[in-house]
Length: 241
Length: 241
DNA sequence: ATCCGATAGAGTGTCGACAATATCAGGCAA
DNA sequence: TTGCCTGATATTGTCGACACTCTATCGGAT
Image (cartoon, rainbow over all chains, first blue to last red; front, side, top):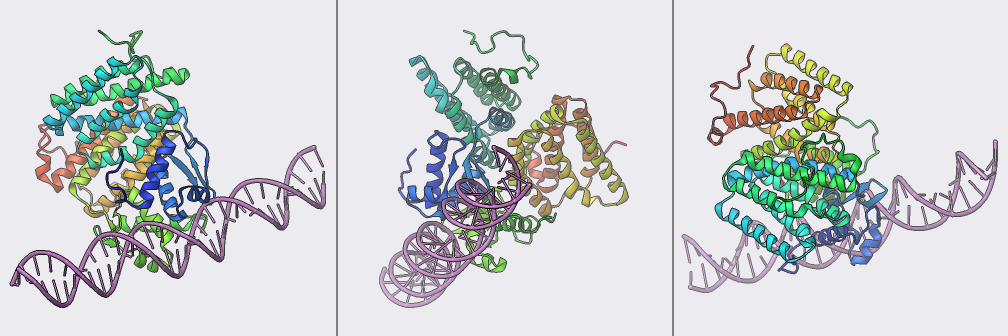
């Protein structure tokens, strides 16, 4: 992830990256106050670039700011997590439909290779933690990229990606879902390879919806009851052989 | 649109509003360079708040910026317009599904009143220009609001709304579609009133898709051919009696 | 005549300082 | 003791100035 050229970007850009990483992986606790003079002193910069970085973090939803009061690291709520799932279901569903139309054969092949690598890595270790943290988002972002829709890519990258990573780092990820998610991913790639945008969208939406329901079951069983039992399958998280 | 309290916001906020309006309605031409010292002199402020406003405009997609080079008003392209339609189809479709679950009876009644007012205004004048410019977006934003999904509302407001207004002001809006759009709006409200989220989403997505196809036919007939003739209806923009 | 390099200019990035506002502690009155 | 008012303090908002980068023009060489 390191930038090959050391100082081709502006100072505010680097501050934004550093603060984003610090917030995402929890070094800056959610809800903690962000003092401009203190942070400027710590990073050895002036308040100008720091303010710019903070404002960009605000656009990413990682910090909340009030005029004349200051900025705080965004609080994580279950409600906010589930809201993001709904937005992702809509956005990534559409991305999948478009990817089925626009992705090249080599891109689909790359996607298949990614899934194979993840499967091998998952078979190797007992607790597939690493996979879900990075690989899953890699898969989703590849499909977003394949949609060829710059606006969609921009919205996902700026408004969703960092916050999804932050929620993952804080709340962790589900256990038995990951292996099932892999087969769902494979079916999605199959639909994309067939150029079946409608099916690809449907599968992606169901995939994200299942992820949300899984999270709701694990984190907030009360909320899961709002879904009117879409399938009578008693163990939907289990994998068929 | 005037703020009732004269100076309850910060200076950068007001600059952001002013510049946003100027860009949206075309007073600042697309592609024109934004010189920080010049704009600062014109508005009688320093470069600090101006830079903050420009950065927020960049987040809204109204301005593109390159490090050490400067900012320009975003160029409008047909491709960009159509890309936004796809994102809106996904996002507002989901918003409609959620609105069907969460909107209160009084909100639905308000929506019906809005539609009636627009119908009356449209019957009054021959060329229903005013309606489409403001009222249509009012309708869509009411539904977005009714989704009760703060993240969805935030994304729509920050990343889509201003650019949609800008494209409308520059390219204008279609003629014979507006009356058809009104009946589509009514059907959507009916589905929401019934609490039928699935139908509401389907209708909203079809509505936005039709708007996109209409725009593609009018602005870029070549692009419209990429859609595989979804219906053999020779005049789909015409209204049934 | 065309292409390349140097130089001047403008503009952006960054900094430190001042002014305005919110927060908090302390004192006073009921 | 509790509530409110007042002042002190720290933080944010804003400003002007300096340093560095990119762009464009001009001169010279091929």
